[in-house]
Length: 179
Image (tube, rainbow, N blue to C red; front, side, top):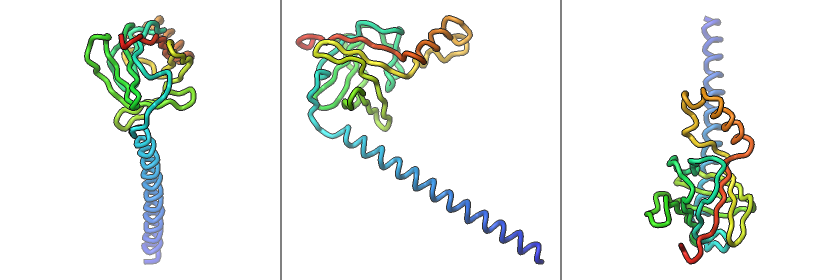
């Protein structure tokens, strides 16, 4: 009888500790989501952005092609158009004459371009920004590299290693008068 009582006390204690841990993890997750939503709501507000980044830009150089923007898995090539609107929206076009296929929110935070796509937040490094040139660094390696047949090739392994160190670099020029 005494042994059964001791086992029940141990089980009860374990369940209480487990429940407390579960509650603490839940509080942490809820707090993290709340902080993220605050950042999202700030990014989605209608603040006017005054920066040389506002306008249409054409990708003229990249250290990897095709490249990908983080929020969209589509393969992109030179001459892709990025448009940064004053209202904090970012659009991507395959060419200057095509319809945009990606639209996210953005803001400038020091030397970072912060992009928000629904509930995901991504940072791009701003290497250089003037009134007519923009150089971005993306730390995410394009997803098409991650196939078994690609990773077995030494050339691809070397490129992945290089991109881990340098990131994907995009060089853009501003399109005058909207192109």
